[in-house]
Image (cartoon, rainbow, N blue to C red; front, side):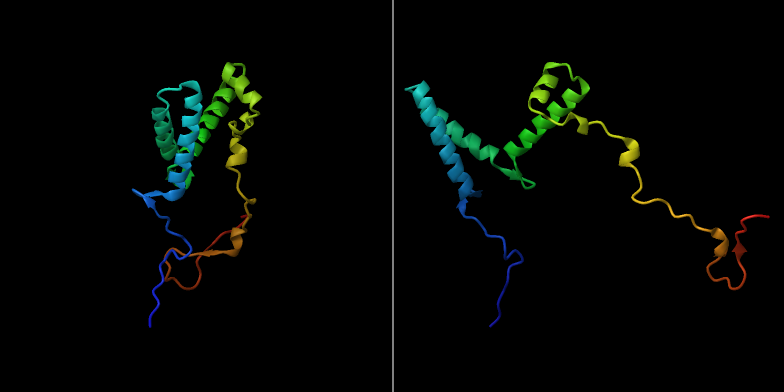
Length: 149
């Protein structure tokens, strides 16, 4: 008897519908119902389309790409835009919004000496201890580096 193991044993395949995992369908349904209930309070007639569009929007915004959902990527994009805009014009309205949200605008300014600094200091090598050959198959005396003449 031979046991066949899948390469992704620890990864559980989720069942859903139309290639959408069940947890996304469930979350989208809950979001659609919440939108429907709020729309029902505001618009007693015609709230069903709002709930349906809330369901579709939740499905689209929860789609994963590269391990991050769409709404997370959109939030990071807006946050990055706010940080860059606030760093370039700190006295503008966007700068005040970034200051209110306590966004780290100092991260935009990069110091080249710090970014491109080597990990450790260069080791000084005494070249007088090395023999240099013109061809790899040479034997005997090669070129010798001399410190002083």
